[in-house]
Length: 285
Length: 120
Image 1 (cartoon, each protein chain N blue to C red):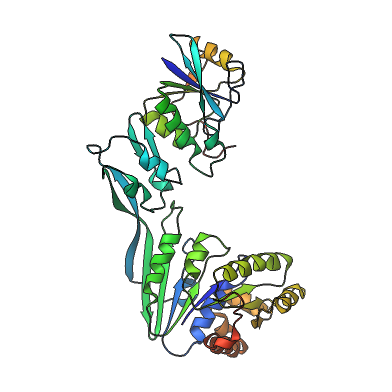
Image 2: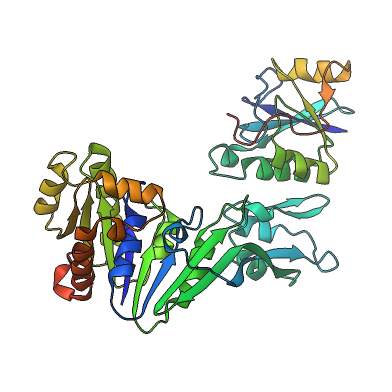
């Protein structure tokens, strides 16, 4: 069972939910931090990640002896990463998405792909808990291939929890593809509701069963709850606004350790994500 | 020698477009024959990314040896340099005036990009 923790808005508590949920599940569990631009689950787990693997993207190199400068590769590249100049072909690696379209379009087989490393996949194991995170190299713009590399480890006999990046863009979609369930974390504020709606739209489009967790549930107004009710979105858990949770967070301590009453709430959430009936399947195939 | 001037219009009286990558057109001026032609660049005007690169490709393929424009970003500059095209920045006003300013040495040849990418 693979469950992704996502949100529209940043700072709603994805990592808090992902970490505490993973720690509350009995039996083998793996947590994948797919927020590769700023992975932060490790701050709360303190599990060393000695196993490192480099993730790379295939980028083209031009064989100048075979290239006739026909311009097919440049026209094939929708990201404009290739300039076909009077003096020859110039590749902008930093713009290349690694799709391989240029290689296929070349009539003279003058292009081949070489791996360009974009980040690292780091893994550590502690007891029945496996932790994997992606760490994007500084200066790299493409995180989706690294997200996919982190997820390559999801063939796991147990429960997999994925911490996604905020928002609804490509890296989030890359993290959500192929999961069994999605937990959308939001907060009862106007921004929380606005971005929650975008996230709901995204998971519906991907046809994934999903439910909501409302963090700092008693701090705002009822509009998120009203919206969930109207849209038949199950509220899987509400986390009350509690200063001790924030203090624990700032000290890198999981909330369930600092606030014992949350332990049962997260265990309950763990049980609910294993039950099919807890999730909204209005968008599911 | 052919000179490409980034322009908002289609003749020598039109204004120099200060942006190289997202200029609507390039006026291709032949200094020997004193004639010009127009290179359309509108497809790069609204490109999400890589407008400068594709504009540089456009200019290089036109046979121009010099580009006169307002500003040139880093990716476009790299392509123009690789294509052995001289980059002249700081031009403004009518295209014909820019050509005159270039001939009289009033415009400077850029040694590097003079603006960041996506500056406007």
